[in-house]
Image (tube, rainbow, N blue to C red; front, side, top):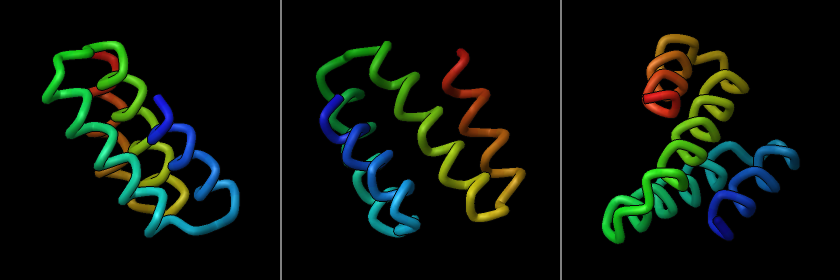
Length: 68
C-alpha cells in the first residue's frame, strides 16, 4: 500500500506522471504476490489519476477493474 500512498501524494501535488508510475509499480507488485484488495485500491487510484488528466474512458475502465 506504500506505493499507492506515494501515487496519491504525487497526484495531490499535481504530478500525474509520477503518480501513474508509482500506481503502476504497486499494481504490478500486488498482482505478483496475489493481493486482490491492493489491486482494487491501485486500479481505483489509477482511475482517479486518469480522471484528473481528463482521460475519462481510461478512468472509467480502471475504476471498473477496481470494483471487480
